[in-house]
Length: 86
Image 1 (cartoon, rainbow, N blue to C red):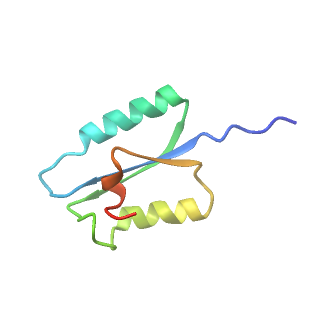
Image 2: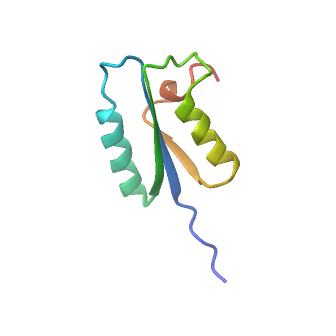
Protein backbone atom coordinates (compact mmCIF):
# COMPACT_ATOMS: atom_id res chain seq x y z
CA UNK A 1 0.00 0.00 0.00
CA UNK A 2 1.14 3.52 -0.61
CA UNK A 3 1.28 6.17 2.08
CA UNK A 4 -1.15 9.00 1.35
CA UNK A 5 0.46 12.37 0.79
CA UNK A 6 0.14 14.73 3.70
CA UNK A 7 -0.61 17.95 1.95
CA UNK A 8 -3.62 19.52 3.67
CA UNK A 9 -2.70 23.05 4.68
CA UNK A 10 -4.51 25.85 6.46
CA UNK A 11 -3.62 29.51 6.14
CA UNK A 12 -3.52 31.79 9.18
CA UNK A 13 -3.50 35.54 8.66
CA UNK A 14 -3.78 38.43 11.06
CA UNK A 15 -3.93 42.18 10.64
CA UNK A 16 -3.74 44.49 13.62
CA UNK A 17 -6.18 47.20 12.56
CA UNK A 18 -9.47 47.23 10.63
CA UNK A 19 -8.00 49.41 7.85
CA UNK A 20 -5.20 46.94 7.07
CA UNK A 21 -5.80 44.45 4.30
CA UNK A 22 -4.55 40.84 4.43
CA UNK A 23 -4.34 40.61 0.62
CA UNK A 24 -0.53 40.50 0.48
CA UNK A 25 -0.49 37.68 3.05
CA UNK A 26 -3.19 35.73 1.15
CA UNK A 27 -1.43 36.10 -2.19
CA UNK A 28 1.96 35.05 -0.85
CA UNK A 29 0.62 32.07 1.07
CA UNK A 30 -1.50 30.81 -1.80
CA UNK A 31 1.45 31.07 -4.18
CA UNK A 32 3.68 29.20 -1.74
CA UNK A 33 1.07 26.45 -1.23
CA UNK A 34 0.79 25.98 -4.99
CA UNK A 35 4.57 25.75 -5.45
CA UNK A 36 4.80 23.27 -2.54
CA UNK A 37 1.96 21.09 -3.85
CA UNK A 38 -0.23 21.79 -0.81
CA UNK A 39 -4.03 21.73 -0.84
CA UNK A 40 -5.51 24.62 1.12
CA UNK A 41 -8.35 23.20 3.22
CA UNK A 42 -9.15 26.39 5.13
CA UNK A 43 -8.07 29.93 5.76
CA UNK A 44 -8.39 31.83 9.00
CA UNK A 45 -8.01 35.59 9.30
CA UNK A 46 -8.27 37.59 12.51
CA UNK A 47 -8.81 41.29 11.83
CA UNK A 48 -8.03 44.07 14.33
CA UNK A 49 -6.79 41.62 16.92
CA UNK A 50 -3.51 42.10 18.75
CA UNK A 51 -0.91 39.37 18.51
CA UNK A 52 -0.63 39.45 22.29
CA UNK A 53 -4.29 38.86 22.92
CA UNK A 54 -5.24 35.26 23.54
CA UNK A 55 -8.87 35.60 22.40
CA UNK A 56 -8.42 35.26 18.64
CA UNK A 57 -11.53 33.48 17.34
CA UNK A 58 -10.11 32.38 13.99
CA UNK A 59 -6.88 31.12 15.57
CA UNK A 60 -8.94 29.17 18.10
CA UNK A 61 -10.93 27.55 15.26
CA UNK A 62 -7.70 26.70 13.44
CA UNK A 63 -6.21 25.14 16.57
CA UNK A 64 -9.33 23.00 17.02
CA UNK A 65 -8.89 21.58 13.52
CA UNK A 66 -5.19 21.01 14.16
CA UNK A 67 -5.94 19.14 17.40
CA UNK A 68 -8.43 16.98 15.48
CA UNK A 69 -5.66 16.20 12.98
CA UNK A 70 -7.63 17.65 10.08
CA UNK A 71 -4.54 19.54 8.88
CA UNK A 72 -1.03 18.53 7.99
CA UNK A 73 0.46 22.01 8.25
CA UNK A 74 -0.32 25.67 8.85
CA UNK A 75 1.14 28.42 6.72
CA UNK A 76 1.70 31.92 8.10
CA UNK A 77 3.13 34.94 6.32
CA UNK A 78 5.46 35.79 9.18
CA UNK A 79 5.69 34.16 12.59
CA UNK A 80 4.61 37.34 14.42
CA UNK A 81 1.23 37.02 12.68
CA UNK A 82 0.80 33.75 14.58
CA UNK A 83 2.40 34.52 17.95
CA UNK A 84 4.49 37.20 19.58
CA UNK A 85 6.24 34.97 22.07
CA UNK A 86 7.56 31.48 21.54
